[in-house]
Length: 301
Image 1 (cartoon, one colour):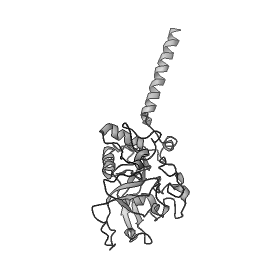
Image 2 (image 1 turned 180 degrees about the vertical axis):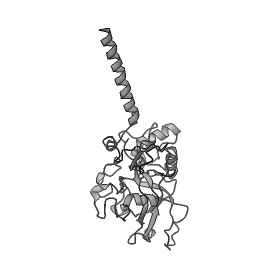
Image 3 (image 1 turned 120 degrees about the vertical axis):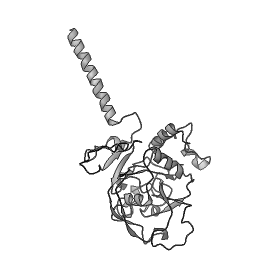
Image 4 (image 1 turned 45 degrees about the vertical axis):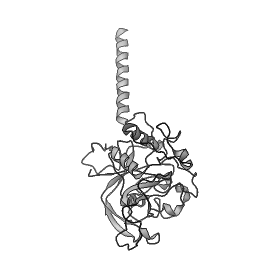
């Protein structure tokens, strides 16, 4: 009888150790996980790369999906040429031209309130807040985001806030060209899903809820590389100043080092602004309930 009890005790300890190891391997730290991530299978090549170490099977191609240190899932945008700009849109999108970009990773989703809170907690960075009625439902109070908004994109962040988050997470803001390629693919799509207007595939003024939506709410609007919400929901800060494209002779005074480029349109804008080539701009210190961001990562970091 005593031997059976000892055996049962040993088995219980063994099972507890196995469970702890499984939780550690899965990276479950009790944080908020997007349902799309919880249900997602392993990357197609079976690899999971830690951006802090870059550890992966060196005999394989770069994994198509990685998970960064802020918990964000990132998708691979392979090296290739792509079509940038548009001839039939606003003059700042001209001329349409071909560019080559090296491979990089981009966050699958916009940075969420839950992810941004971890950054705030660890760095004591100021919380998103603006003292105005129009910002009230998005303002953070007592160090945290509005109730029930964990998986909504963080807004009321300046370019400097987004940059600080990107650096903290070991990443960076995407360049304007990287953002456009990730949104439209190599073939110059008008929208992330194709060339047809479809207001049901994105959160814009025509058919959205009239506010931000949880990230990943429009899976039918996914880009060719697997990035979501690149049309509508919130504008996204990029790394670049608003500059003319090569060959553009427009004399607008907006070009230069006054405005940063934001991309993707928002829940408060109409569909024409959600085209993948569309460029918009804002001063770096702008706070808006329409603007958030996502991060990028170079393979040769």
